[in-house]
Image (tube, rainbow, N blue to C red; front, side, top):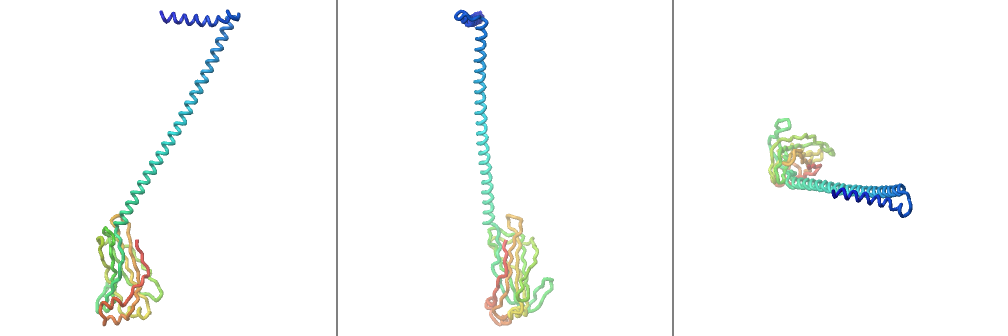
Length: 263
């Protein structure tokens, strides 16, 4: 009942507003109604325009906010990627540093020389040679803090015309023994016949002694190599070695480096 009264009052108010101009100005009621409706339509269009502009502004603001959030997200992702890459590089450098400080390093330290009188030395083909020899041995040392594994040692002499350089063609022979850290070791003996040493002393030929070690460290399966080649320079006639003390024999020659390789 109350709602009906309110509705009736509203209708009456609208009619009064509509008819008021006819009372004050003498305008026809129909013309007044058209004017009122036209005024309401204009206000309605205006409000719709304002609402549309407001929605457009909100949409633009939301778009800019989304772009900003997307840029910030991309920046955060890039920072995360860079941090991950830096962490990876740090770990890799740490691992390399550990390997570098702990891995096996085999170095050739020196040549040892001796004199074998009336002895038998085995040739490369397995046969034995009898006579007097100048004997050479390569002394090695593992400077690393971990063992060297699959160690193979090779030593060979070369007798060449003066001025020629040796070109050892030695294939890898990985698969030998292990050498502990901070441990010295030596190659087998290689003998050069005494008459050949005398010819080298008289500058009729050159004698080279080549040695090589193939091995792996505990961090990698990649083979490593240490090889040295030296030319023997006799400071004294080898024939005189039979009559001098062993210490003097060791001081009677010099090993001049031809080349060396360390990996």
